Length: 469
Image (cartoon, rainbow, N blue to C red; front, side, top):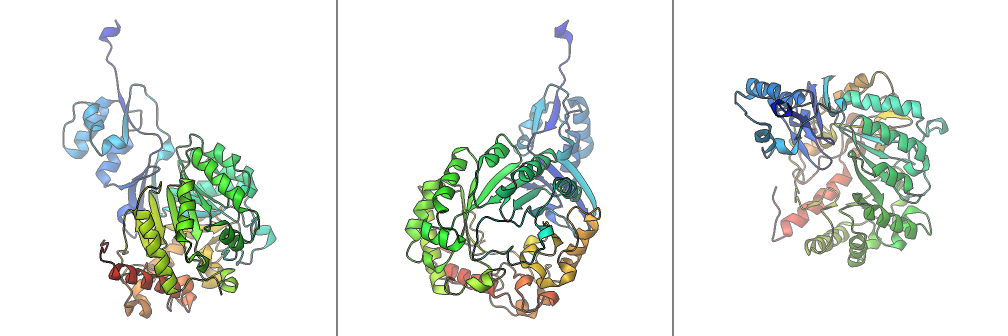
């Protein structure tokens, strides 16, 4: 009798893959996409619509009819879809009727522009005293230091409502709030939102190991490490912290977690490139980002005497590029902020004067316990009307987002005369309004971006092996 039974199959989207479709006034290629832990693919309406039917509930007889109706092509077996180089990475064939997580596929309406990612400052409390700290440079009331669990849940629901696909959880120091951090990550996982955790790794890391164990939506842990022991402890304002942080990084890597090291560069690095690179190499991390501290927050008072000048940055960059290109390391990605990306070698940002300001972060929402802002990093430099706009757990999250992005869309890069006449335009990441001479009016020159663009121009114009786009 069993021989006469027909075996049904059910195509379904694999676990750990999400689809997002955002119908927005400002149209972008990334409005419709698929995201995995490591990749992003843009989709068209036809493919998106087809994939929504691959929900683990529709058997193949129904799927093949839907496939024909959408693509006007016949398909005989599930294997022909699975063997497709593209769809095979997204779909799997199940012989049981089991639904996918409904949060894997989200459609959003009523947005002026896609809200793709979020930077979530879970707390403003910290156990270090970093010279460049952007967050401690902001005047925050003691009542606005943290999120409670109720507000965490509301905020996660809001991000889900906006169609966000990725969240960066940062602080302050998130490991000071282990209970809240664990709760937040469980909610993000439930809503199928990918997340990265930023930490200084100076606290017990067992909560991180538990959060990341077999979690399909936990992307990476970003740890701050500023070169060798002397540089790191001087810059982070904490003697004796380096050894423990180094050990914790090794434990995280050993656990199979993707660890990204972020290093703040100072002039103490000059002549120590090989030593610093050896440290990164020995840690066996996959990603390393070198950043140049931005002249905001506490760095306004502490940068003198530590900042790198033009010739130093060129020299350091060239030395690290040579070391990375030699191979024999574990790096899969190496970046010098706004200057160099490896292995992609995307050295020039494809932008136009007609693009909106903050175009490279147009889909980003940032907030802390004190509320959502135009840009948390720059505090109230944009004026009270663009700082602490409203709590991230507000019911009016779409209205809040549309208010922020409406301002960004209203102002174009070309509205700033400094950008229109700049000889470094093609080398510049776009400039940051938070560092304009007149931030509220979005006018002036962003000296930080100009400085980095001049370094990029020097590096790639003077090199025999230019890396074109």
